[in-house]
Length: 363
Image 1 (spheres, one colour):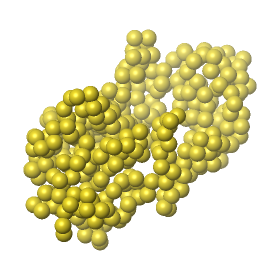
Image 2: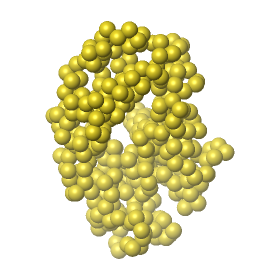
Image 3: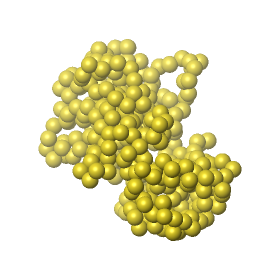
Image 4: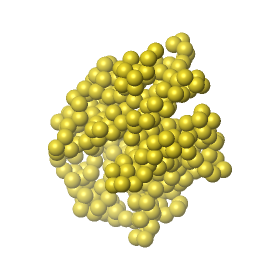
């Protein structure tokens, strides 16, 4: 889908390499500039799953000769992705003012936690910090327990990487339609806060309250996870009354006077406790057999490895093993295009010679 688009990525952590992997999955040519790190450095690996489908070259950004190579690559590129702290690229002489002057059509993608500007712009932080400060963590977890979400999914990936990708694609279209390149300032706090728009829309109907445990998504007995017999968990989120009615029928509790009062908030804590006892009587597999094929909106909580064996996940062929890694196939899917069946994970610096040939650099 993105054939003909070339993106230069500066090696980083988390959302930036994920964003460039997604663009590579969609057919863009991504060249990753890996850092020059001693092989015995802890945590330094020659391969990274997020580099799948990319090309690799190792360059020292403190070397004037290597910076010249970087600038040569910029001249051939449609996009650039970097996840440095604000000011780092400028100190290296690779900031947008210089780069966009040399290549006005370049889309300069910047991935940070706090953004390029603001009081915290140069402070360190991680996923929970960003989504905590911007409000996106507030409704996570059950009432009375510390908020916690699946690591990286809401901040790094949702509010960060995916918003960077949307920004890059928007800017590519702008250039295609005759506009100039620009800087895409993708801050995790911006994107994660924007993701709250759907929940905030519930305020008009009274479905969202500031106090935790009183909203339709974080308080009811019909919107939470329950422990099953023998270990494992079941997710329940039957919001609409017709789905809730099916849920009660599957449990054999369709005539229970208390449970029929679905939206009575005063009963939510007590009914959550009651259902905890109900779900503890059967295993995850037994509950899955009961609810599968119904509109009860109930599903098991599976690990990625267990998810591989799930009939629906297997039918869609979502997971695959490659080069010793469990990986998820590219998403979304297209009716007129399919990604490469196996996008190789490059060994760092494996494309040095071919890139030098393309750039006509003699070494």
